[in-house]
Image 1 (cartoon, rainbow, N blue to C red):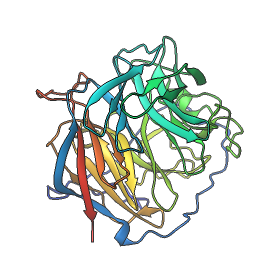
Image 2: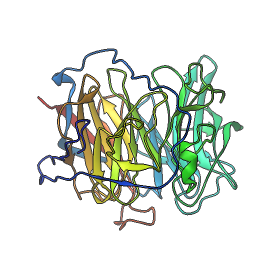
Image 3: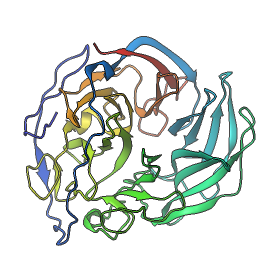
Image 4: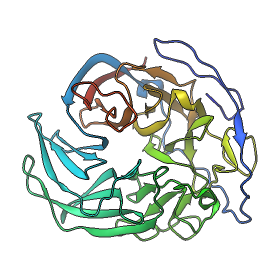
Length: 380
């Protein structure tokens, strides 16, 4: 783990201790204009009683999924699941059955692109399903009314929220979530256009913050859609109970990252990977060798972050106190379930983990892919 002080260590829960540190440089240019970094002030202090750990109570909620990418719990205890390659939205009912809600029109899969993240917005007018996906020439977010009742949901007509996000065979980002402030956060990859990450006017290599209708949210640091820059491929965002935003990011050859996200901050890609110790970039609070993470979805319960690892085939846990790591991250489920794509906290406080062994890079077992439910218990 890479700490703000420059120390590096990674702990493993019930496993072996791993250590490592470092970074690699890239010759891409540094932007001449940056917004000032505004560090978020935690709204509450996280106590150790708000730290959580997985237990041995693990069960399967669904199986036979095909390249699943995102899972969104529903208020009734069910869930919606996106499948990357066929563009399908599936409903997991409270009776543990799977049914197809509909196909997202315009999804063009290929490489690592296809249907990605989902988010729900419910108000007096009903419920809207937001979906990030790769279209023929770009990545975009569209929204569709979620119509009907649990067990019989279907999709209404889609409308574009934001488009023109660059797409490629890799580095497409794709996670979306409504933050505590009510705005939609959208993670984008550099789509193999490395310099885009340092261009505040480009949509690639960013975390975007927009209104529900797709406009730049009020208070954004550059008065456009960008919230933070210098990202290679963010695929996870979450907020701990103190209001701090966190993101997981794929590195290139050396270091994957867990970053504390600050508005107007520059996270260094493609100039740096991992910890650089430079005043003009924000260092990650944790960095792992790419073989031990390849982090995708992340979730938070109280003050603990849960980071799903693809290539690393493990779940990383990081406890937060006063907006920083309280200790070295620890690993659970190492190698037990294969590739882990997404993780969410359900309404009952349990952790749901979406496996991803059928995405072309894993070794599928007969029932893969599976959505797991894991009971959590206090860490202390």
